[in-house]
Amino acid sequence: MKTIVSGIQPTGSLNIGTYLGSIKNFVKLQQKYSDHHFYLFIADLHAMTTPIDAKKLRKKIKELAALYLACGLERDNLSLFIQSEIPAHSQMGYLLQCFTYMGELERMTQYKDKAQKQSEGIRSSLFTYPALMAGDILLYDAEYVPVGDDQKQHLELTRNIAERINQRYGEVFKVPKPLIPKIGARIMSLTDPMRKMSKSDENVKSRINLLDEENIIRKRIKSAVTDSDQTVRYDKQNKPGLSNLFDIRIAITDESVKEIEDAYADKGYKDFKEDLGEIVVNELLPIQKRYRELLDSGELDQILDEGKQRAEKIAAEKIDSLNRILGLGRKRKQKG
Ligand code: AMP
Ligand code: TRP
Image 1 (tube, rainbow, N blue to C red):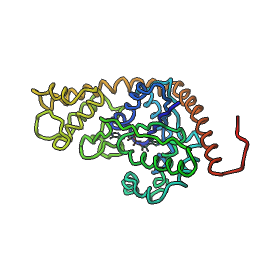
Image 2: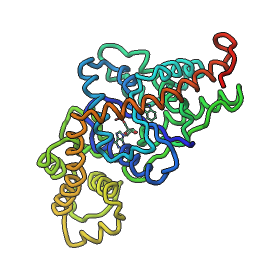
Image 3: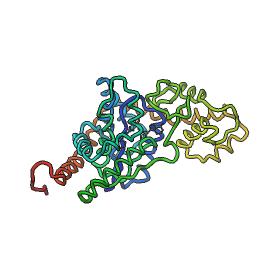
Image 4: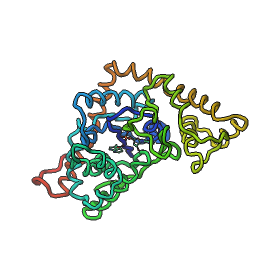
């Protein structure tokens, strides 16, 4: 069966950037690729690449799992699991480091950005992180990997690593393709539309968190930075703030730019922002309700256990076969 793989780090609060760039896209893809199996995981090992409090991490993992599900994922063709619960991810990460060059890792822009922000020193895992990520994907022979724009470079590296190993050892891995949504791949900060909306931005006004209260959501949109012109028109160059609000709206409603521009031909930013507040609230409130129900239910643990079981088996087989191909360990009779 063809597979689709993606992960999200359990750090910070999930915001609509992550939601529209990744989770919502995932939900849409589940409908489009209903004959594929989806492996979706909480990337807690990735969260260890920068300092994080153990108690906080534990809490975040469960919250993120509940939030993922609350966003409307179909359960039939989904394995939802926690990365660290499957040792094959760490094993694969190491093995792929052996096929990744320093020069490649040094070019990663996310590494360069994050490295600059480290006050306690840069963990070597932050540097080798793309190899771990490549492992997450190649373990399951992913056909597609839905991610936001900022992960494109990591995906490109994953493809290079897979091709490099295939060239040397035969067809070991499927070479995965990124699936980057046309709209929503890069939701920008509400206070600075030239920067990505980020869960680590110190300014809380820069984003809408998925669990924000209704009045906060409306307030954040109302105060979003826009230009002083009043014509509701999509123009990334000259109206980056407003265009970002367009992107948020379109990623939710699937309207076209023209439809929206026409609807506001006689109206200004105030109306546009008020309506967007309504749209975002209507999108997020049902998610918040389901989230609260799931978080306190045994159902969540059951789903995570089932996800783990299935992923674990596939991943362990892949590691066994890779060890064999690479000549690691002793020669053993092949099972089955
Ligand atoms: P992260 O929350 O950084 O682990 O990212 C999880 C997923 O959300 C990745 O696929 C990112 O590319 C995507 N993502 C994060 N921030 C944004 C954003 N501002 N706009 C669109 N996608 C995003
Ligand atoms: N690195 C991704 C991020 O920070 C999260 C991630 C880890 C991921 N492993 C992955 C995404 C595998 C897709 C596939 O957003």
